[in-house]
Image (cartoon, rainbow, N blue to C red; front, side, top):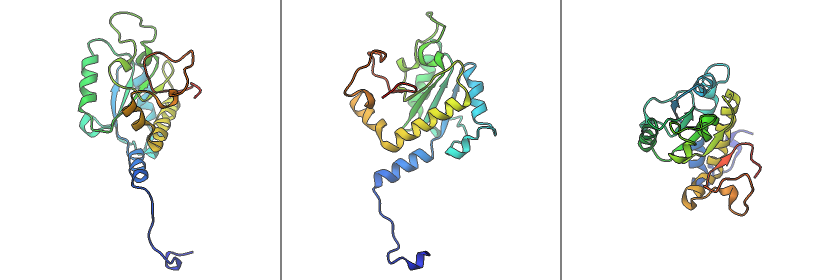
Length: 187
């Protein structure tokens, strides 16, 4: 059927759905590679994994051009203010992926020099587990973030201050501090 055969040549939809689709299709990441996880993040941007199919072909060097921060690796106490400054310079809406066990919980570095979880500095939207996580894990985290952007759960979380999947129930493995979706955790 050609467009000439249609009686009405217009599309209808909600503006919120259009905005969510545009945000999901044009997420521009800022690199914040700090350790060995950064190698896996670079591999995910290569030809073998091709992040360009998600609209993320160029990692931005300026935080003012990016809306997704991928924190890859351990964050030291000296790097924490720099990380927060880069996050504050990013445009709204902005998202954060914590890549690797060192960025998420401090990993095996349980000492005074390493921040025990990047969520103490910036609000994290998706956690990518592993030491180091594979490029496929990062891509799964990106797709999880895309789904959150599409459904609008992130905006609900930012206004209420608590994760959307924990509104009615508390499970024993969920920390007391409100965090967002942890990959691998049943909802």
